[in-house]
Image 1 (cartoon, rainbow, N blue to C red):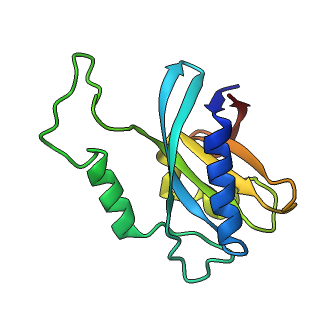
Image 2 (cartoon, rainbow, N blue to C red; image 1 turned 90 degrees about the vertical axis):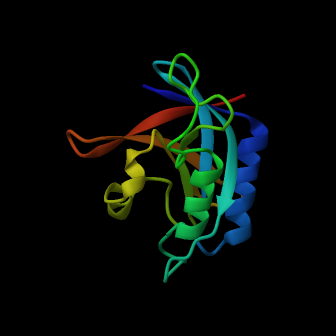
Length: 156
């Protein structure tokens, strides 16, 4: 099983954002780094606007915010300078996204399986089904067979 390392502060920031948006679904970006073949460390998060027509049951990241984010982290820079191993050295690395399920468990829905976000390395779902004890679950996506794999979350 793969693992996702996350600090208490980042974990709390993500849960706090989701609580503030309740009863709507919240969404945001995750930044991170690969520790080894089986471990990714989340190094930051950024709350993004949910512009879905029905934000109580769906999320859609604001496309303008998403393009702006990609531009800020250098993902759209075709003239970028990489280090000797081909990695960007001066911008955070996009590790994935998070979103909340305000009233349901933190498991991927059929809509989550059908999203383009599944191409990112990490997909966090925050369940506020029990608002006094929210939970975060982490997933990665496999194309064959078409499914999410759950990752273990380790709080640092």
